[in-house]
Image (cartoon, rainbow, N blue to C red; front, side, top):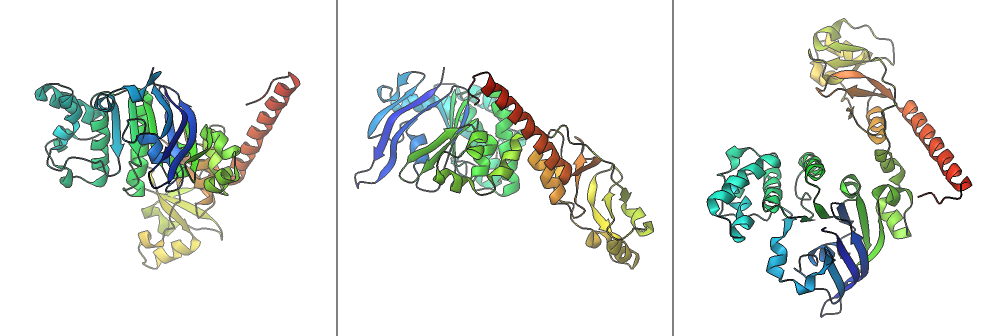
Length: 383
């Protein structure tokens, strides 16, 4: 078991600054726990106390029931993976040798460690062709993947991640988040992840610990509960006024109907005849959406304007397995008001309607209310 428990932990620095105040929480073995909060709220300090990079002023931290203050810090850290912002890679070592660092420190032969490192590169989605490159020759996203690979190379039961994706662009960040979800589903590590981004916390965490000023824990709950029932005014303000919309990401959209959408290829656009207010989705030959056109855009194409300059952006797509938030977003971000549903290949399968998405939400809530009322009638306390 690799559960982690904080009991009455306080960290006060010599100048009198208190970074963490009376922190008590238990992180379950195999869970993905996210520490989130504004800058200076003690979330990183709390995480770094787990591997004794920082020593608490008072209180106890245990890992698997063992008090970490009685464990040699070097021995402790060799059993805990650590990923930081921008990878924290050794610039003078190749990708392969960066990944093999901890196994070599633990006494493995370099040749064996390098062989195992190649397999870890595969696991985090990095091409083996990058193995002999140096960190400066990699993109930011590639460097972060190498950082994750290095942390996983010794197969540690615990993984600490200190704002690892904050220095990359939004597209790469989303890819890395998806990669972490895939890896956790496969490996079931005990992960403690620090971020200042509430959306990232909600997306990744099994449980979310919200820290406030002075390192005070404000709430520690599953993300659905943090969104639905903020424990304090601070949490409500930090989560934001649109927390109800964020909460839709925990609602299934499988029952949402898909309607037929009128489509046309680029070659067919000049021949379209559209009524005012009507829209047509332009696709390529494989059925992948390219954008929307209305009557005005069609007239512009007939007059010689390039199609690419006449189409309206398509908005977000509703992909297989997506949640109700993504369904609603696809509809309201579309110029036509119709969300585009696609299959695994990216081809159009139909359209989704925002009104129907709201209707599905209402039915789900009605079902939840009925279940809650039945529980109350039976004398149970609903969660």
